[in-house]
Length: 358
Image (cartoon, rainbow, N blue to C red; front, side, top):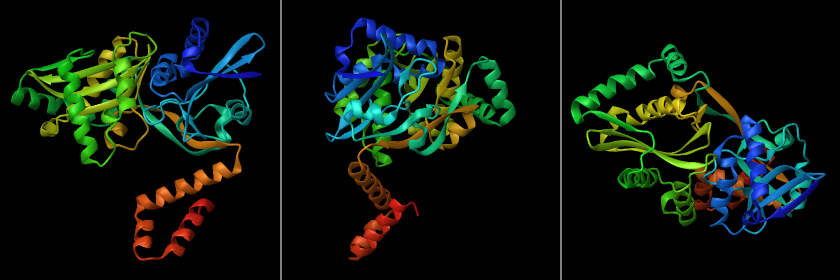
């Protein structure tokens, strides 16, 4: 197998058509994050974005988009905002991850939302979990009946919706809301949420903002941003910026007016998007991996997602493991407590313990 590496903009129309064709031939690859349009949008603002092109004889059999960060660390394209990662490939293709990294000149490649069923990467998984989805393959009515049988999420949403209408005015749902005011409201709510939860504000991160702006103007069937909004009267109460292909909607940036939290408009919005999406060709809504209670209540299926790293350099891989172990310890507060008390030996022992997997 021949593997060559190019910058994304260097791919010609034939290569991009082949990429799209590989996605269309394999439903599991239909995520908008795996599309060439997503890679191109990221590559326009991330100069270290690359694509490895896999060829078998005269035929292209795979595309592996990635970024190089800190000069030596390989990560999936759009790392930090991509909820589906992997190699876009011809059906039945087998590949050697170490040979792939060697061709890319990468000592290590790290992932956190890798498609869990890409077998060649399986030995490098350190964690596998399920990404909850709203499976609409049987249509919205089948989904709704399943959720009604499983619990009270639909009944509660309907009850709170009636209260919202009574208090604020008639509900209006817009599946593809092109109003600048809707996007402005979503961005304001989401930035406030990031501040509240002490997370970095993705909407104020220049490269992420540029990628979103790019995809907001896209009309590509395989990857375009869509804003969906629920209004009560003329007031927006919940909005979602999603990324969609022809058959998959990625649940990307949801938010709502916290002053109106009692109406649970975020859950209502998910149900409205499922109903509209099913009519518009969406086979499932990928809610993204997490154990959030509302996702557990809305999900009726899941997709396997893996985190881990492929490494061909012992020194770089070990250094990354040590850094990850230290980061986890700092987040847990234990390292900070030890450092403040001057127990540096304990810090080192904690890191070694993390590396040993204890």
